[in-house]
Image (tube, rainbow, N blue to C red; front, side, top):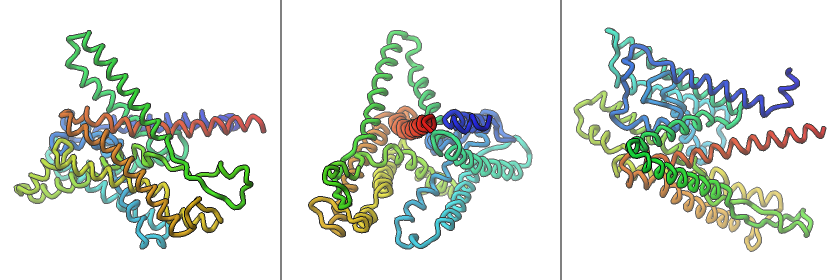
Length: 400
């Protein structure tokens, strides 16, 4: 039996992902104790719509309500810090340790603000809050562990559970949008068909842009002349794909939680009350901040995928060069212009489809669908690539 599973890795990984998904859905079905079944914290800050893309769900308070938002936020913070020269000499193990501590601190912050916004059915409110705070933090750590286990054992990487959550959210938002047409079956069918066509075309556009790339020709001194035109450096038109949307929503939650924490300390402060109204994806100021974050993350992910300085140094060490550009500083500047240009194109594209709808569509759940579709396409393509590599590996095993 063990030999059969070792030969069929695709089946084995698929079963692991199903098991992890079962545990995730089970955890989402475990409610927090001492709460009214109909209580939620969605009324202020619109946190639920932001938490969905990080695997959380604040519309139904449960063990996994925080999702992996704390881990994603810590990951972004250390990705920014990793670009600094100061962190180049820091050991990866120590950086990972600092990241875990930051994740825990963010999880405690989010859990504390969440439980302080709730009214419990028990007389001892303090004990109930402490118990629920521990449960929420433990749930966030457990979701992070499940994501890491799926990356190691399953299919879809660490963000598989987010893909499931996004699919559920899009489905629910679509049903809510179509509900006004229930009394007019003819209009319902027309709207449904048009919506499906638009969604399919938009997803096809995202797949095309995810695969589109510019090939920068490379000259390798060790390569035979007849293969010279086959060496190139690929640069994606949209380097980050839908990843900035995912992380931008996670980052948007931090100032909202922090402001709510300040409001708990100073409940009558008018500035914090004003910020609570402004820092949402229904307010032009909040949307503007969200757009800036999307653009900044597009540049960050573009430079993480290809560091011009490191690539130029690698060319020099290997004896490779770009036609028309001297090795070293000129090559680095040329690569920097290319990476920045494609990062800007990708950032504007993401801002257009993931940010501008928030200004045009008053229903926040509906306006978030384009961005969620971009994330879904990116995560699905990652899973498809993994399945494809496993399938190819299986074909080679049959030849051995």
